[in-house]
Amino acid sequence: MNYVPRRMQKPITIRSDKAAKLLAQLTRDGRSQVEVIEEALAKLPKPEARKDEIAEFMASIEAIVARVDKSKIPTMKEFDAMEYDENGLPR
Amino acid sequence: MVDTSALVAILGGEDGFRPIAKALRVEPLATIISPVLVEFHRVTNDQAEDAQMLIEKLVGSGVIFNPFTIDAAQQSVRANPLFGKGNKQGGKLNLLDLMVYGAAKAAGYPILCTGRDFATTDAQIHPASRIDYP
Image (cartoon, rainbow over all chains, first blue to last red; front, top):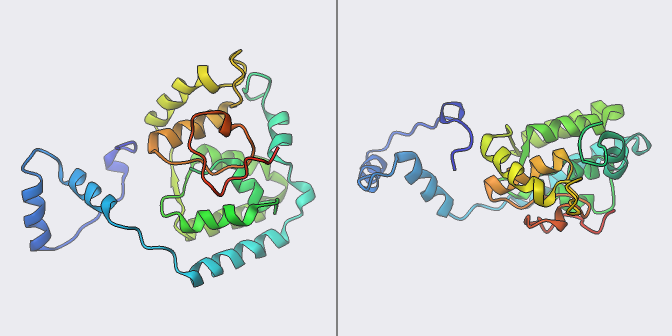
C-alpha cells in the first residue's frame, strides 16, 4: 500500500551482499525491491513491547493525566455538538 | 487507527483510558492522522500544554503520525453515503469521523475510539476501545 508518496517516505540503507543477492532473486518476477522487503518484513512476528517500557509509558501517561484540569476538557459528545451541525459538517 | 475520542479519553482520564493508552504503546503500527491531531488540540484548547505533553510522549513512544492521503480520502468518500451524518440513512459519522474511517480502511487497521459511532459501521474496532461510552 503506497499511500504516502514514495519520495516522502523514510529511506533505509543497508550493506549486505547476502541480502542483495536474495533481493535480486526475489525481484526476478518483476516485483520491486520495496514490495519484496515490505512483504518480508510484514511476515516477521513483531516483538512485543517490554513490560518495563510499558510500565514507564503508563507512568508517564498517569503523570500527565494527573496534571489535567478535567473540568476544562469537554467530552467528545459535547465537543461534537458544539463543532458539527446535524449533517456532520463543521458549524 | 486512533480517533480523537481515544486521545481525549486519555487526557481527560475518562473511565477505561488505561487500556486505550496501553494500546498506543503496544501496537507497533498505532497511527494518528494529521486531522485528528488538529481536532484533538481544538477539543483540549483550554489544556493546551498538557495536550502537547501527551502528543510529545506518543511521538517519543513510536506512535506513527501520518498525513491524510488520497487513498484515505477515497475511502471516506465511499463511506459518506453509507455512514455519513445527514445522509438520511441514519449515518452517525461527522466529517472528521469519516476521515478516520477512511484512513483506517485504507491502511487495513482497526479504529481505537470511544463511543458507539464507529461501531455502527463496518469498520474494525480495536478491542481496547470503549464503545459503551456515550
